[in-house]
Amino acid sequence: MKKSLLVCSLVAIIGAAPAYADTFSVNVGAIGVMPSDSSSNLPVVESIAGFENGSTGVTVDNNTQLGITIDYKMTNNWTLELVAATPFTHEIHGTGVLAGMKIGETKHLPPTLLAQYHFDIGSGNVKPFVGFGLNYTTFFEDKVSNELVTTLGALGVATAGDHVDLALSDSFGYALQAGLNWKLTDELGVHVMVSKMDIDTDADVRLNGTTIERVAVEIDPTVAMVGVRYTF
Image (cartoon, rainbow, N blue to C red; front, side):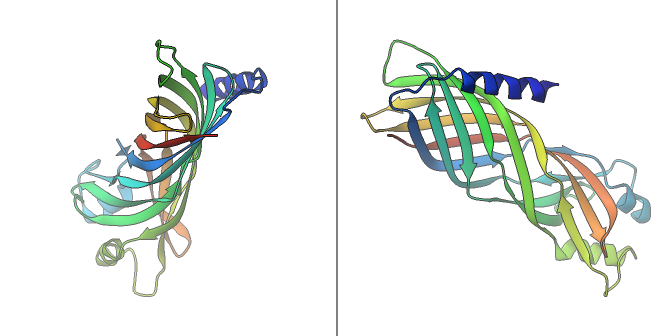
């Protein structure tokens, strides 16, 4: 229901938008993804290894890439922004009794569409804003670590001839944002933003194509960007 309301709100804003001067801006700079993650446990590993129930989990590390966002100015106060970046790469590690163990790694792209409201604060050069929108995150090039394969072998789950791989499901959720644009000249400026994104995925460990362990991971990262702004 919340996602449907967000979609309807974005469509309404876009539909009401007239053509506007200085319509497009591009922001380029460093963008970082900092997960505040939590996960379910690994029941198969716990059962076979004799660990206490709930004593395992996974965590995802931070990563910074080149961010590129495109702003479409619809009115004096409303802007539509598309957030993109070069692919993020994250290592996945164990927690609890598996702390420090590398489970694997993945890459992802999180294209995000936001409607921004820009506040009038009496300055034409500084424009703070807040935004809300939708995020779609696709995961790819998922890889298991040699450490995980060795551990599964030691537990008797996998043998030398088995194929072990990792697969993460794509995610669709909300995004909230706050930031500011600081105009230096008619064309150049500074863009700063912080976003909170709802990203949830199921990480499947597969043995010869069959899922033997599934972990639900709520990544829910804080995403921050500082970049150079160019207005056409």
